[in-house]
Length: 613
Image (cartoon, rainbow, N blue to C red; front, side, top):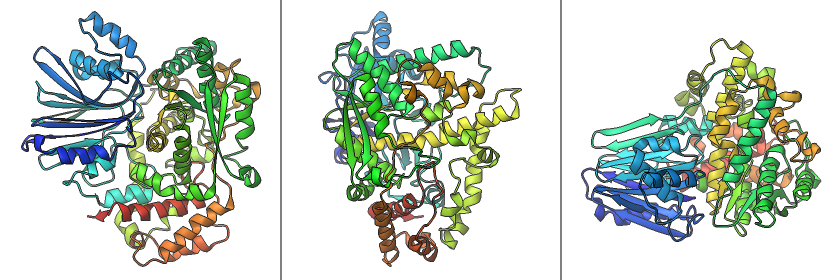
């Protein structure tokens, strides 16, 4: 993976903007610690930071290719899993290649097919191509939004980058936030409305979209969307197709010229990825697959089983690694470093995020990076296969809001009266919820209960999954680790989208059809293990640390968050012995994470020098 950034300007000569582009590119050094590159022309300037994964010698960027009078330059972040297929087809059309990188395959595909090239790509990507002959910038993002891409227009300048920090490094783009940006942070956060860049005038290129920018202006085009139709296959055919698709996906995603491993919790999702990866390693004579799991110092002492986290991961990870013969590594995180890394996690996102759920992944990725450059993860299986508890909750299905915000009122009541009056938080959430429902691709004639679950699937895939994909990308890339997510293969997502709930819930257990497809690959106990999310710490020292941090902020009259919160209400909650235990976002974020989130907001306002406009 890598970091990309750049500029287009129809009035200013960008060959004199090297210092600006260098500053923007430097902000992405963690994403690409191995090399950097800059390309300048009067109208366009591209920057790149490289994490070397494939073709160390031939994959440098920005990459320039010419054919006849056509010159195109690319800056690219991502990984294509069908590069050999593209090579064969393009060679048949007369193209030759200087190396075996997916970067060259992608640039050549654009030169042959133009914007329609994206429809031929299987992978995770965000890239920009300057087409000199057309005087046009072409940018695209992968179908599920695994790789990030933001852009802004300020005066005559078009600015883009992998992360918000790259855009904010441009002198024309101050860190300003308007009322809508505040609502994204204080009401929806750590979620975010698709396309919203939080900072004023900043936008996100949505998943499944490409963008054209030329002298006629900016045009966005949606090249991929989910389509609803009756599922044509019976149980046996469906089971076999899922297995075949998933195995092909995992095997494709093992391509690399650097060490590859898997993240293994012992849950169904990561164990399935690991099972097919381990088999491929054995068949190809690559030696044992290395697997990694994370836990917390003294967590076995404090762990409390609950509805959302019924058991701890360690025994399950050990069972799977014994079964598959992987070489397993444990990472144990202690409370002080978990708390200390909350600020690093915020900087990696450029926004307040999922608190310790973020910082723990950052620390985990940092340790994996010492031994590997690429890791495969079980992320997104619950979104794709309907594994979350809200898919089976009558109460959640009856609520006219996002099902992962069950305790949303807990946070709204902590906002200052002035901010609530400005944002109208309940209406803001309701409006974003209505907008999401209007996008759902309906299946004509579908009975109401199935239609409601289809809505839940769409909400989860397009509003909840992006939060976790952002987390996975930013925390891993902050450590220079590339994480791949096989469950986000668009072929698998398209197929599973239309499988009826009764089949997805086969055997009356969440993700039942996936369990059935994996029969024989994993121990039966693992196949029947109920969902247990990414682990969080139960150590009371963590709650005490973030509580103290929050109280210190409340006692600082210069704390920038104070005008936005109800200080007495937050203080009363922080001083309460047992604040509340109901998650206010997702399954893991309860009272400790609320204090940590607010502390991250304060740090964000301070460090990024955010001004409200």
